[in-house]
Image (tube, rainbow, N blue to C red; front, top):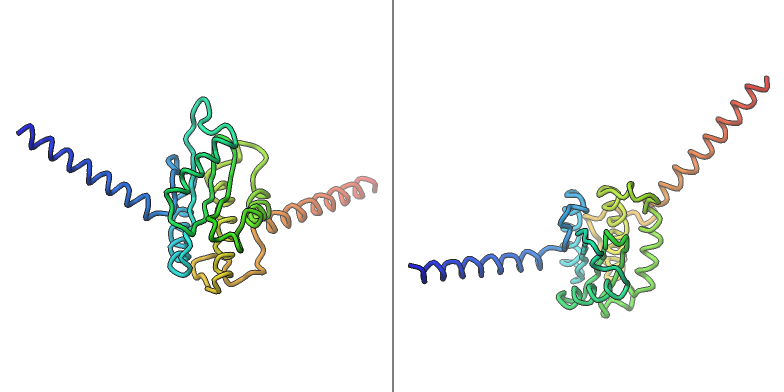
Length: 213
């Protein structure tokens, strides 16, 4: 009876291990243990990543390292690069990965060597600074899951469009696929800031004239 129980436990462990491996490899989001990427954003990533893969063969992943530890698990650039290399070795090429090290406030984008003809590190850095960095809040308290999700998705969407353009395919699930001239979140924020500044200036000018009378 004891031997039978051990065999059963071993079988269940094998099934659980196989199921976990299948789930991690079939999804496009790693980590995110504390739901830093909100559910709606997760769904968007899974849907669009699958479409990109089906149409181009390229996989786009998110790796969200949101565990908090003392001391930090990845305090240096070398530590983060070692983690990225280990993750990359487990992926099938071609791929793009957006890494978020939440505790360290660091974000990195990498792509496999076979994509470097159009999506090399220089291009990825450009996407980061143009579509992601500008949306990051100055204060840590404003770095909420919805805000982080918006930042990630803005860059993620641009990566998907860049891949689609290279392979000359159209993406039906991307929110900017058919409108390359549509304003990005960054443009919208800048416009809102400008309108607010002009409005405050006009209001102050009007109030000053009224008092002078």
